[in-house]
Structures are given as C-alpha cells and as structure tokens.
Length: 300
Image (cartoon, rainbow, N blue to C red; front, top):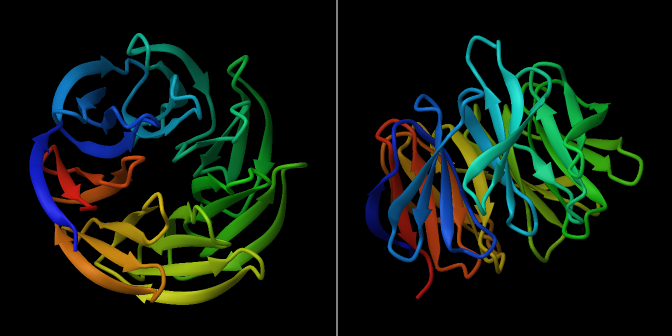
C-alpha cells in the first residue's frame, strides 16, 4: 500500500511530470504559465523555472542519456505546434522544431537517434532526426494519436489513438503500422511493461485499463479504474502500474500478477500524470488544477 508524502508546490497548471533518468530531478510542464519547473527530488523543492517562449508546454520526453528533454508545445487555439529542445545541463531551450497540430507525448528511440512525435489532429507521427533537429518524414497512423512508447528492445512502438479506440503497433525497422489492437473508449496513454510481453493503456472515456499481450496482440484484461484516467506508468520492477484519474482526484494501483486494483490513493485536484523514480521508491503526480505535485512513497 503506497503512502502519501508531502504535497509540493509546482507552479500554475502543473499538467505533466517526468523524472530524469538519474532520478535527481523532476520536471513539470506548466501549461498556462509557459514554463518548465524543476524539482530537486532529494529535497522535493523547486530549484529552477525554465521559460518556454514558443508557447504552452504540454508534455515532455527524455533522451536516453538524460541530457535533453523534448517538450511538446501547443495552444488551445491550434495556432502553435512545435517541439522544444530543452538542454538539461544549462536548463535552457536550445531549439524549436515545427510539427503538425497538437503534438502529444513524444518518445525517443532506444538508441537516441530519432524522436517520434504523435500529431493529434493530423493522424500522423513526425519522425525527427535528433542530430539535426529536423523532421525527416511523417508516418500515417489511425486518427488522433496521443501517446507513443517503445518496446524494451526498440523494435516496436505502441501508439494510443484517442478517437479511433485502437492501439497501433509500429515496426520501427521500416516505420510501418503492422497491427491495430481494438481497446476500450478513448485510449489516452500507453505503458510498456519492463520485462513481460505486455502493454497497458488507459481508456479515458470508459475509465478502464486494457492489458495487451504483445505476442498475440490481443487484449488479455480489462480493469476498471478511477474516473477519466489520463496516464499510466509501470513501476521499474513491473510489479505495479499506476493510473492518474483526472476526475476522481486519485491514483489507482494495479497489481500486475492479479490484474486488479489493489489501492486507490487520493491526490490533489485533477491529477494528469504519474512519474516514478528509477529506484521505484517514489512517485510524483502532477495536479493540474491546484498547481502541485503529490508525492507517493511506493516502496519500503
């Protein structure tokens, strides 16, 4: 049973949180404020605020080496669509890459050479060369791609297609869609299990998690969770998954062996994402409406 830690002020509209690969910092995208807030995880205090001049930061993805964060930037008026390149050494934005309308959560290939950006409104994924910060091609997928994550070996990418009610499977050798797995209503995010042939996704409008066997590409479990889940994250050892339930003000804890919810943890107002430290001991939940992070003690 996870226990609640302190609530950490993290700036207005704390919409998304990621933890650095070394576990030393958490980075928070503050939408309306137009900044990325940096939290020192050793003391759980804000140590820096990074302006994002290109527009509202929405989502963030780390490079494998932790030196770069790719920030998805867009506004509600659909006049801004870009990916910002944040240098974590200098805590500054060093480049802005134009993409298609409403880029959601991107992912960096396991070798660090390519950034895959799902463009919600165009039904495409922009492929960006991380050496040049240039878009080299666009991959057509099912409408409204939201979230993308790579398999552990990097040979596949899994994409939550929000209004298509499918998870697309992409072969990264030639960047072709090789399968579309039907799931529940409005898949919002995906998470690849660290050791098992399993992908979890949350379904926003059916308030469920679907578990997909990546060998058979079949749904093997449907798990009710809190209302309107937006994000799902595995613990590093794969024993548990955590969902951010934005309209339930809670995190659901799923046991990977039993495929059942074993705990429901209260959070702040409108939790939108969950990030876990590499040692699996601490979780950070971004609370959009009250500008905080809820800290979860996950391991004894």
